[in-house]
View (cartoon, helix red, strand yellow):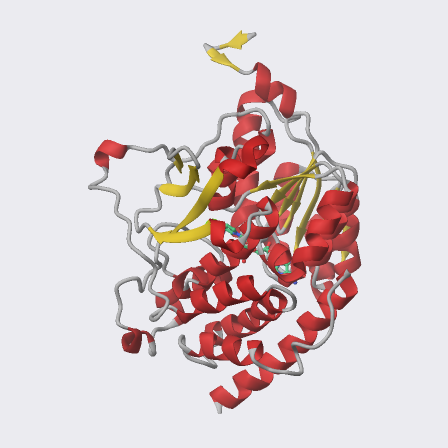
Length: 407
Ligand code: NAD
Ligand code: MG
């Protein structure tokens, strides 16, 4: 069937999918709702019915989203904001709830697609709840895979969920990888923009401000991932994410700095072929891919104009100037508890940097100290409880280190 010259038959098929957006007020959440709004303008208001929207503290924006997207349920994580949400939405039919358990309830409701757009380890439990329920898990939150690694993998294999990565490099890899010929994969290379300090001397980074660090050259993202991109920790977390999502050993995973963020991932095969995924740096492309997978649908994302680009360049990552990448690579090699510690210490350090308590180069110092703290490296992580316990012990340790550095 053709409407106005464009073939909508496939999108109509997928647009009946019920969607949950966890972290709807964040950068990923807003882009997800933008893609859905775009589809609704073409196919009507019934497209992608929303089961639940959740946010941590921005009740105003959540209320605006509820009025536009009419979810069945809206949850605010911070219970002290519930009264505000209720006042803003007293006249709607949407069920309103607050607190961590209510977010888990939202993540578990019946739906075909769940967008995991929560930032940080706070996304671990909701992610596992969604994986257990099944369907398409549109995975933006990388910290849950890094911190809960083997637990996440076990849950993924035990469920009927399909993880469609939304992180742009992993979404690209997901599209490029020939899972039936995994023995013939030589290397998966993730590109890194290099962030705002790509060409800076290390000493000059000592005094950078949060404003400079979050000013990403190519992507507009939340504060935490923007700082991670500036330290290159983001690429390190992504290597660990790729290891778990694609079941590839560390020596088959690589990183290359590509400042234009046009090529997102390169997959090399045994026969000498290298496949690359290219697109404009716009998260609405991988989001639309996840919403419609295994089909494709239109998205409002920016289009690529290769002729307008001066050129595409590639260079090796410098772990001397960006020690967070080296710490993450070492954690990937070490496995076990290291990635959980790496992630938790990094979250605390990044928040402390954003709060101007420690300097930019202190982020790597805090993570390094946590990774070599003997009392943290003790124990096992075989279930969610153990992951959360190690996460919280590491946070305490990292907070103490922040206190020392800030003094
Ligand atoms: P963001 O800070 O803009 O948004 C985070 C969302 O999570 C908000 O809706 C917030 O309310 C919610 N949230 C925060 N703390 C929470 C808590 N304790 N409990 C429940 N909800 C909480 O972040 P973002 O940039 O949208 O990133 C979200 C995730 O996606 C991150 O894991 C990030 O690494 C990943 N990611 C983002 C991008 C991007 O372009 N923004 C790209 C790739 C991957
Ligand atoms: Mg990425």
